[in-house]
Length: 118
Image (cartoon, rainbow, N blue to C red; front, top):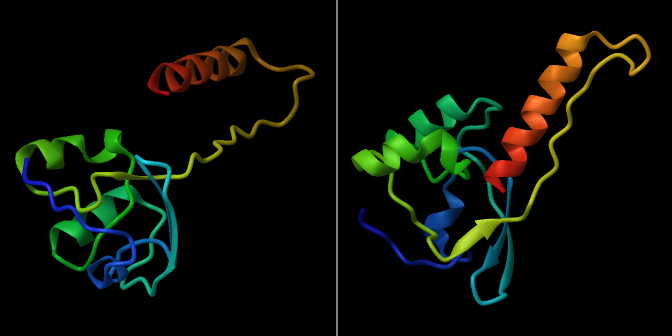
């Protein structure tokens, strides 16, 4: 896999697909926060992957979503020494009272799977 080592402040990173703000943490403890103007904005990783592959800009993506494209060379890591800040995932359900066993099983399954990825 070809790697391009650049910094978040590099103007090439300002042409992006996805977010209007790039916040990143470096491997040596550096922090960067850069305001950018996205060319494409979407809540769907597939759209962001396609935009990045089409050369529209860079995209901040979960590795699980783009590992095949990285492996095949359709995508290239442009900030290999930087990562996004940790986020929060919310699982929304109506109420714990009267929760169906299937809902509880789904919550437990997702919690276990996410914990294993971290």
